[in-house]
Length: 356
Image (cartoon, rainbow, N blue to C red; front, side, top):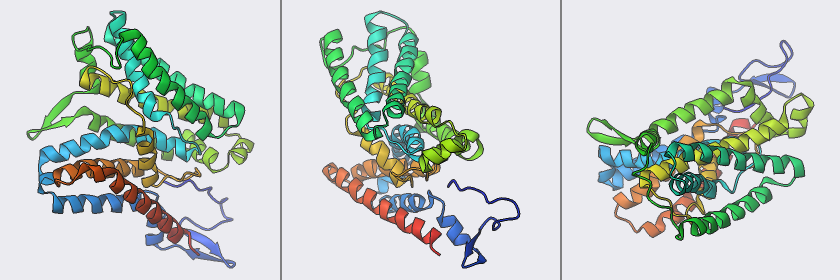
């Protein structure tokens, strides 16, 4: 999953080898395994799963695990593009409220203008992609850190979500759109369930795994994946060898916009209405899932599989605390400990894998 420049043929060590004091040293299979960014979070996710299976017998039921996977998928779908953006050297603080912006746009446009809900869905997609493009364009045009650019977007969207919703609907929530044309078809795509052995599984779990497989293929098998690692490692060096840095940065922010749109549509068609003040703080969960999944804040390192396990850990902890009968107020504290532990484990794994 890591991005490494291959040595010229006949001049460098073979795969799995490295130079040390003038001689070629082959790295052990264990070190090569530890070099993969998702190994640490996989072990952590496995430990969390085993822990809650032991302390909360309810988790062992099929319906409970389906709920855990559903909670994980709503985080994981967004964590994937956020992780790709972090590998590219940036992050997006507006991702949480952008989800709500997409849902509000679709709901109000469809209801207030009495249009087929698919019209609102399509316009909402255009708005979400435009927000991502704006973030990327501001970043490359001004040279400002993504923290400042997306913090500004976060504040703008937070205010617009609440103010426009109150202005249009006279309330802090949108109207119920469940009886409008096209609702059933849209719900089937974004928020339906299907039965597996008597257990109801949400369609978002399938979409989550499909998006993870697609992101993994892009990172490992395409030129665009190489560009992501290159601009995250050193954008100036990447530009010097012909990598389209501007296109890559903007497109990564637009991918985050696409993820926000998809999750926003799921929320809208799951609950039929949207609260305009929601979404604040979720951006930190998406970033944390990516970091726990092995992505570095400095960019140039990470995978798409790691954030899948990171999101699963969040879903497992979120539901596991409930099934164990513990006070849910401890959830954030548990997540904080988990985040710090994952970062320390990832740091140790990375140093162990690269130690001479």
